[in-house]
Image (cartoon, rainbow, N blue to C red):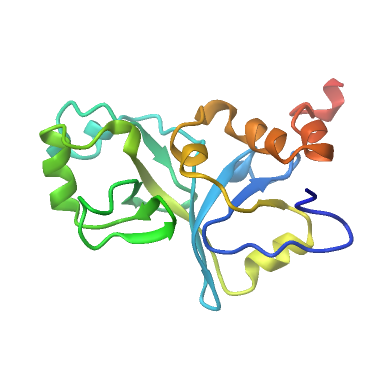
Length: 192
C-alpha cells in the first residue's frame, strides 16, 4: 500500500503516526515518529515516540519512586509539562481514547497510585516531557513540502512495544516498497 506519493497527499488524522522524511532539517524531528493525539481545525498535537530523555522519570516526578518507566521528549514545545499515554482506560478515569487501545491522559493521582502499587505495568504507560504542536494549517504546509510520511492505522503494539531506537526504520519497513528502501538511507548522504 502506498501511504505517500507525489500524486496524492495523504492527510494526517488523529491517531496516525508521522514519520519524518530522512533528511528533515529540523533537529527536533531527526528520524522521529510522532503519535498524533489531536488533529483538527485548531491545530495538531502529538508526542515523539522515539526520543528518550536524558533524565529518568523519577528525576522529574517524586511520587513514582523507583517505578521503571522511561521518560521521552515529546517534542520541542513546553518542556516544563508532563504528559502520558497508556493502554489502561478502565483503570485511569478521564482518559481520552486516541485509537482503539491507546489513551491519552487521565487522572494523574490515580496513575501514580497504580504505579506505586505496581497495578500498572511500565510497558503500558509512556511519559513525555513537552510535546509536538502545529498551528492550524502548519502541518499541512509541512506535508505539502514532503517533510512527513503518514502511517495510517498504527497498532498499540507499534506505539508501546516496538523498540523505540529502531522505531523510525521499523515503521518505514512496515510500509514496504520505496519506504523500505528509504529506511536504509544514511543519516548523512555524503557518507554513501
